[in-house]
Image (cartoon, rainbow, N blue to C red; front, side, top):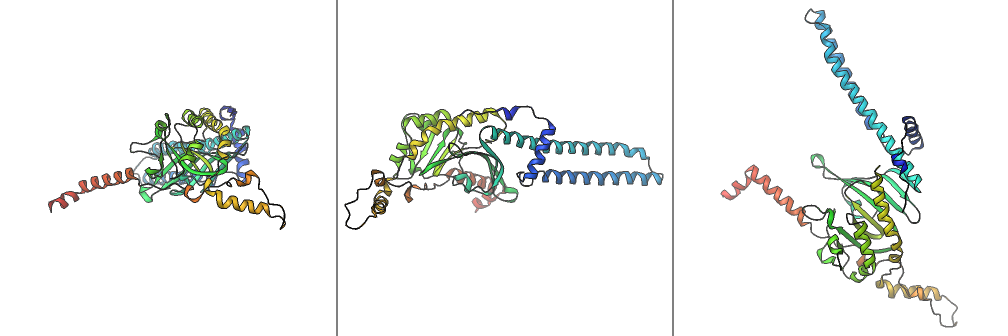
Length: 375
């Protein structure tokens, strides 16, 4: 998949960006709260700066009037506050301008490559594993193409915990719409795992691990529903496995319903042409093999559904010659039997061990262990 990266790097003047920012706001496409936070912060800084300045100058004037000081002594602090205020204002203006330029570049990059840029989406209704965890779920800088099939690139955030224990999780994802539902399959990339194992937000029952031939197991741990091992082998032929190893070895992969997701704990929608070159090469390498996947049918649906399809096709006049349904009608319809739609969750032993170690460390520091064992 070739692409035009010029909108990401071509020079753009301030007037063009300013006009684009106004156009974005007028069209209603600006991100929710765009610029509001910066304006509020700027207003707070301005109020604090003005209050300190008025208070300080007023104090020195009062002191001078009473013969206790020199009004020139107020100049130094006022100058310092002025520099701080101007510096804060400059940072706010630069932040607003930088955000607008980023939107301008991504929007025009999307247009140049047959896609559409969307600033953000709250709680995207996608079935992938990262979209069901935490709260404050939001996709940002979404670039979506419709042809030859729907593909979406975006950055994604969600938050777990509350108060001081909140953690914001950062992901980039590519979502590719398939032509037919497939069994739930996960490829956990070995190359991006953390110290205590997988970096995925969900663990899976180890009995669902399917070991494949060659070097594939060195790069990915493949999980498929029990009883769907042969179906996974049909989908992951040696040439497809080679494509994943060559192009997506640092990406986690999930096939669920009629979607294929690629995940990484980094932003995908960036102004970096090399990142886009990599993502486009990955998607391009997979595109021409997805047709093979879409010919897959779940044999578990054969008997009842094929009989129903043949009966519906017969629908002829009583007493007519016996009806012979076409061969295609005898194939299972598109879909996945209930047992293959979702993997079974596993026990997150790594997280449990970390919590236990943390609890023991806290107990040791607080003297609880000594109190327990002294009994």
